[in-house]
Image (cartoon, rainbow, N blue to C red; front, side):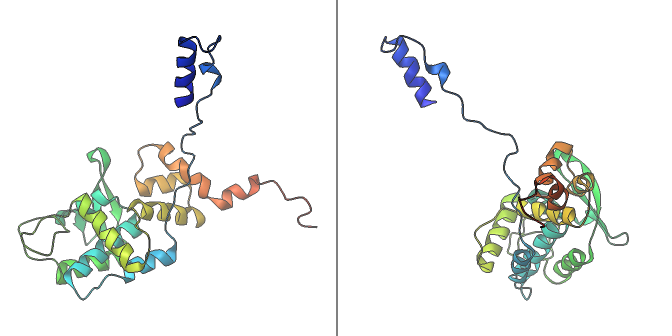
Length: 221
């Protein structure tokens, strides 16, 4: 951009006879060119294991991280979860995501156990109907920023560089693909409104991409 501006200036001031700015191409910016970066299974276990479940804050953080890891919730979705959104008999939770769309998801046993432990032994009695609240007065619902802070503290305890909560979604999608799930199934679990949002994970589906790789000369001989 700077070079094109200079060449336009050079032509406008008579320093060059021909307009050369058009000869400088724009930098290529390929859409969805980057790979989604998830978390390895061992890293997820370290993040969960670092929560001190002998404390109320530890029980809460463990439950938050469990929902992020097991269901691929967004941070705002976990923070916005209400007590009435949990159907214990059906083993489901109602998640309100982007566009205020509410969808019901099965509640895996590990995440359900973490939620129950927080609600029974950690969550303070307060008027708020939010599942996740602060553990000190005045009790307030966790905001998306608070959920990011939970993730940040977990990374510090696990000795990892600070990661975003979306890493859990990427990890879940990648693991589902490696287990044989299709892209539409991944999109349904992650509640993508567009197939384009899910298509980025095709690049990490090594099993599906393997037949497309050219054989190395001399391999298999």
